[in-house]
Image (tube, rainbow, N blue to C red):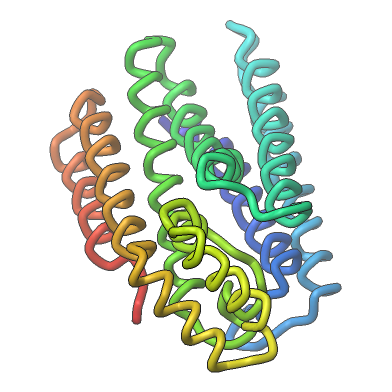
Length: 262
């Protein structure tokens, strides 16, 4: 499995690049080594990690014996997934109107689900061509990615002020669910509060309370558990030593029980 280390390094570099660039695009505070960095610095670091990812992948591909066409396969999958992530991020930040919950799920899949699918699949593909086993790795990675995105959405929903998604008008899963189940009057009230929240702390707090009353936070937690069950099911079907399976299982359980601090 040492063949998978450079591939894992390339994936991790892309993960870091996406984190820096996503924070810039969302207007979040960006912390590096316990200090806040500016958006230009974060963009530069993110760009550097993209280059590191390509170098790691190319060096591994150049050193891999040409016994099969895995070079072109992995390179194509990495680039295709990056394009999917960019499309999902574009849909998230360039919304002509509030998307519905179904559209937002597609954004989540593009930004996180498919990216973690890539990581799990690419590592496994270095060791096996077994399509059934690869499909289990894909399912595990996808559902883990969706759990992590929900975790991030809950953290942003619970945070107050400009760092949170209500005041910053960067709306995510709890809000879209609340809008999908609200009565016409509740929906109108919530949209009014969301519009005022960036400049009115009272409106922000009232919007958060209304989203919770409509079940936005509880539904997010239920969805986290649903994706956990799917990830566990995939994990149970993967051929690996039991002690390694238990490590992943414990992490999934921890993630579902500790989605975000209050």
